[in-house]
Image (cartoon, rainbow, N blue to C red; front, side, top):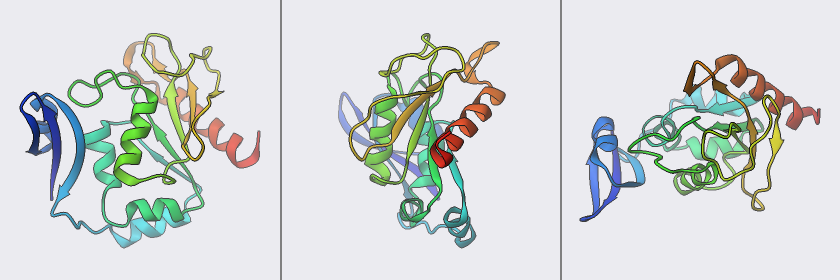
Length: 189
């Protein structure tokens, strides 16, 4: 299977094949897709999604790591059918060639454009002020709910940055934020 993208450049919409070619091409990624176009999901994966309590997508490259796994045939439907809390974790920094200048809401729009609505319940975005998001920054370690459009995923923020490498997530902070959000949503804590 090959990852492909439609990328808008100065010369129009072009189709690019191959993960590394997509990010190095330049322009704005409009859509990613797989060749062949009907890649079937592994049945055990679908069963695991349907039985899960929490499903987390990301962090990772939105267009070349996260979305390729979600656009597989039957995956969006399985996510919508699952009673699990479905969480997308935004990267803590924008990624050249993929998410230049993106806000948390831009990530949501890209997800919904590719897999439709209702497949993601909550988006976890970094809250530190040195990274651009269009929702209000929160204090260190604080989880904040933000307003979203009706039917759209709820965007929540937390300080998840590794202070030694501020372009990366701190795995402990991220794990704590994910579990805090899960408990809050599942049990109202």
